[in-house]
Image (cartoon, rainbow, N blue to C red; front, top):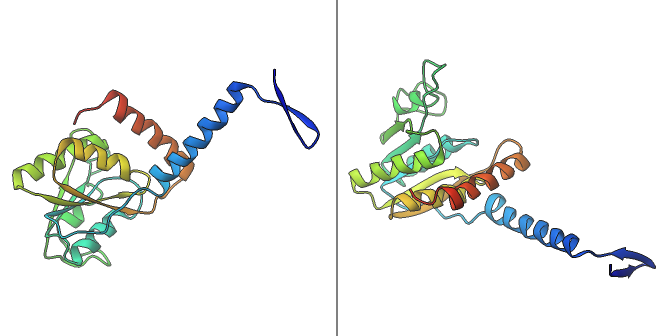
Length: 194
């Protein structure tokens, strides 16, 4: 076994240890680039603002973009929970104006329950809706940790222009990054289609 000297101490450098260091370094850089500081866009004038489900103030950001006039339609993933009588965002899509900070709005709000309660299910639904309505541009609102995968999945299903808008990740960042590594691996290896 070859050894190097650091401060008079002999350190064994095994090829596997070096490989592990390289893999960890590359993993840290990719995690930072993909899940902590992913490429994001400025909002664009679009046909719709799409809010995928998950952690963080996504609905708030989507409503704010609509209030600023970036689109006349807000599409919100709002899965139905069999144990609850109401969905989480049905009040917003019902346009009741009875929540503080959410007056009656003058844009269309569409809540949908994806066929599968996954980002892939959301992408499939949005792609079908975009095709039906002839949309060409979408502002996609997700959290920073999900942004790259959400865009990838939507691009597989729909060929329009996507501006990726993010909100801060809430919850445990290490847990979210670990989850996203698994989800991106599944999306790139096992589920390569729409």
